[in-house]
Length: 279
Ligand code: SF4
Image 1 (cartoon, rainbow, N blue to C red):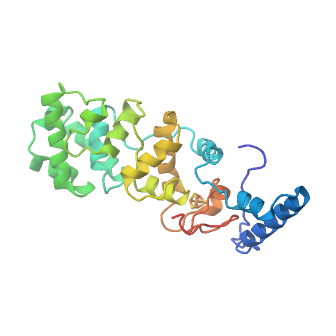
Image 2 (cartoon, rainbow, N blue to C red; image 1 turned 120 degrees about the vertical axis):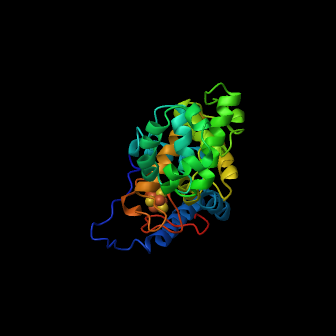
Image 3 (cartoon, rainbow, N blue to C red; image 1 turned 60 degrees about the horizontal axis):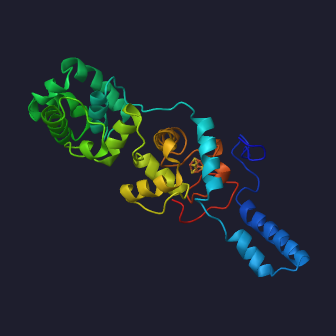
């Protein structure tokens, strides 16, 4: 982390003298300083204040760079939490993870892949036969249909190998961009897109990296500002951040190293002003 940007640490007691009042006070002091400089330089004060204080750009490259650096320090080696030994296992685990947790899926998949070791084994099933094995992950009827349908298509059209192209992956039943991005990024190491799950959605909004709510549009927004070689890692880092600190209810802002870069409206502790749309 560059010198001078270490976030302030709060008191352990949780009582942070003046933290609520500080942002306003800071802006006022900053405004006075800008006005003083403007007077000294003989430049229109209003123009200067406007340029400095209204010029906040949440997707400015310096800010993005700083966020990425801090994420690298926080989560240097993160990867997908779904256990897998092949592209097929990762594909199945990702389909099962919809509306479920990775922990839950990891409880189910070892036994599932012991029982049906190959994609051909899955292709030979009727969806109803798979249902009891995946029941605990929720939405088990749809998931069974998707897994068996994907296996049959992979055997029929792709020689039993999970395809490594986005367009081909999207032809598989139950596979949309999010699942395809997980498989492409994690297994094939291809940065074709960015996984947007509930954590990425929430944190991208809190950090003002997007103003959208539709996952496809959020993905497009993030692809414009995050360097391509970082797409897969960034999504994993944000997912871990969402699990550990930036949780949906009561994020642990007091422990977060992104704190002084974050203006989220629902922060639980802050040293900077908050923005009402940042949520
Ligand atoms: S400061 Fe709080 S809301 Fe912002 S990223 Fe960190 S945990 Fe999330």
